[in-house]
Amino acid sequence: MEQLNKPDLNAAMFNAPIPGQSLTHELGARPWQSPSRFSTLEEVVDYYIKKLNDDSVAQQVLTIIEQKDFSVADMANVIQLNSVMQGVHNIDLGVLVMPIIMEFIMMMADAEGIEYETGLDDESPELKDSAVNKALADFAKQKDAGEAEEEEQEPEEEPVKGLMSRRA
Amino acid sequence: MSRGMNPGIQAYKNYANAPRAKKVEPDNNAGLMQSIKRIKDDSTNMPNVRQRAAAYFHAIQDAHEKIKADKNGAA
Image (tube, rainbow over all chains, first blue to last red; front, side, top):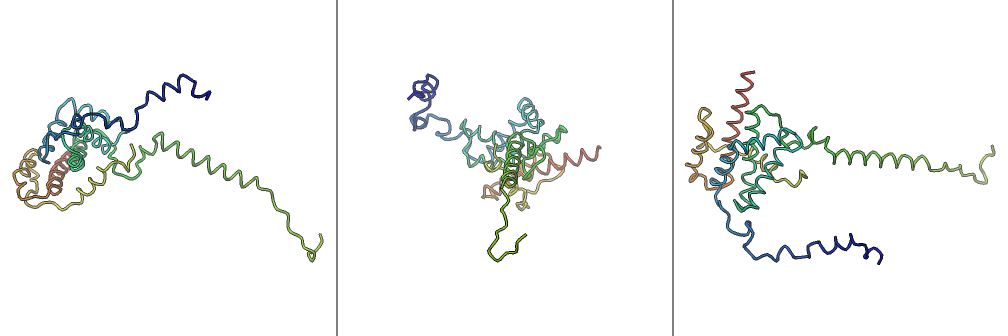
């Protein structure tokens, strides 16, 4: 009861969306609920090639890729998902065209002499150094150390001596 | 972003291993836009949309390889 009277908790509770609120908007009002702008693969490929050939877009994409914190695969996924949300094309065409976007970005990066992380390898050294992976590795180490300490703390059992055992 | 959440990684590997369409095999001397136009013009021969997508991918891949080869040659 005391917790409920705290003002910050009350505010957080009543500011949250109610279940089903996302479905209350009029059907078809969202861009992804109406027919998409492009419906064929050719149109979508043209759209992305023109878009990525634009100097300002290419500069932004290559700047992010150059950091190596964000792989080309993730970048392509973000680009196509954004287009789906804007109603440019549907999700099926987005998945079909994603490798084409990836290859095009890699081609642009190689043309400019920029090193990048493809995101195709299972475990890349750059992503291995990410904060999440480091935290997981630290957690695993701590867990192992904790288990080792527990094993050490276990008292040594005295040898069982029966009636027929030899006396020291 | 979780890597398992990205469908593009598997799609990329599928396209890379897909057989090349002989009829639209991109000419190495032609530019990328010309290769794409050729595939588009020949799209009636490829009713399968995945096959067409792989053809576009291979055209870009060839242009990419050419750029890499040029860079290596210059260096």
